[in-house]
Amino acid sequence: MISAESAGEISSGRESMVQEEPAETTGRYIVTLREDHDGDRDLSALRTVAGADLVRPEDFDESEIDMAEVDSAGGLYLSELGIAVVNTDPAGARSLLAQGAEESQVLAVEPERVHHIRGGADYVRGYREGVHDLAGRITGEESATAGGGGSSSQPRVRFVDTADWTWGLEATRAVTSPSSGAGTRVAVLDTGFTTGHPDFAGRSVVTHSFIQGETVEDGHGHGTHCIGTACGPKNPTGVRRYGVAYQADIFAGKVLSNAGSGTDAGILAGIAWALTKRAHVISMSLGANVQQVSAAYTQAGRRALVRGALIVAAAGNNANRSLGNFGFVGIPANAPTIMAVGAIDANGGIAFFSARSNPVRGGQVDLAGPGVGVFSSWKEPERHRSISGTSMATPHAAGIAALWAQQTRRRGWDLWATLAAESTRLQLPSVDVGGGLVIAPQ
Amino acid sequence: MIWLSMTRVIVTVDAEGAAVDEVALTLSDRGLHVDQVMEATGTISGWADDPDALRSVPGVVAVEEERDFQLPPPDSPLQ
Image 1: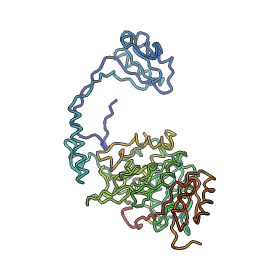
Image 2: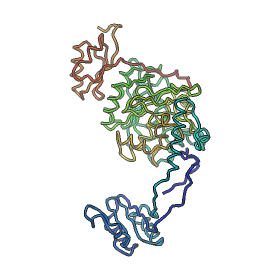
Image 3: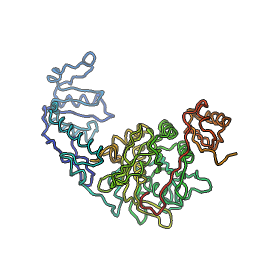
């Protein structure tokens, strides 16, 4: 089914070189039934509309359906898939949809399409684009590819902060998500939290400091900002909404000091604590500029996934793309068991500082999030601030992971796969943005 | 005693839960001054004169020198 692009979406579709053709159809209809459909009722409803019995795989040995029988029957009923092919006219198809509205058996009705193998021209065009892309990477020049070119630097839509919400919440579709993060536990391992922040009054916040000699009170601001992005309130007083999972339970682990310093021991202890607290998502906006993967973080990430926790970490800010330095994903985001999040700006372009994938196993950027000019909470007395960084993209991904965890009940690797499958492809290299912009469930 | 000359290390072990503490004891015998034992992640932090000597302890997956992490100062627009 084709959905129209609505205004305000970051577009993944370029000016297509391939002409869309009107679909060639057979005159039959494909009926998709709801997950909880009642097979007997379906069959009877479909038979009525088709005017004859439908053929089923069970009617044949080894489900080897004789398609000629389908043509002369009322159609084909595939109960395992919850799908039927029905020989009926447009009026019959419409009546099936009408039934769907009341009795909720039918999810969709589509004309059956004819498919053809694709011609050779597409293959050659694809090959040419591949060569352009490779040449660009070797020379370090982001060269325009034929047909796709100008549009990679001229994105279609520009997002802005509005009075209601931040550009990042709109771009990731968090503002239209029916999920709130209720029932999920999000741990943010950072410089702590401003526990008295008025925007978080009444929220469940569990804290612990892993920094000797310092309380969890955020003397830097970074931790409060990241927690704000991941879990900030739906209707903060006097400012625009800036948080994704506004009903998630917050776990603030201070693993970086008020001066912004931390060590492996503190960070790993923070991860262990978050796992003991049964966090669903662990957000780490921190990193060290080391290409080699750390065994400790790889194991921590793996054990987290096994226990149903997904760790997301900042890809890193060590790039300076205007000078031709693409940076690299460092520890801990480069662990194969930890998701690395890069940063895009409000034009849908890659942030100048966002680190590129590192060739080691696990070193790839997995997803991208809003990371330039991100408005969120800050320590007192300022209370709010806009800053940039892959540190800001990461809690967008964390909060959205919490929304998906709530909606689908998926955990660990399943949740990773869900985020990957549900990201919007961007017109940017995957070495920079992985599977694309992280998107909230709708 | 922990001397300044000692190296801060993170030891990753394949043990789980309480078994991590047992490996920590053996590591201690081999010269690791144990700081923290993290059962959930299977990691142990501490100080060692000779990190290499720890690698042959049964259950040890890796011995790494501890790394430092540093954010920009609070007033930096890039975080």
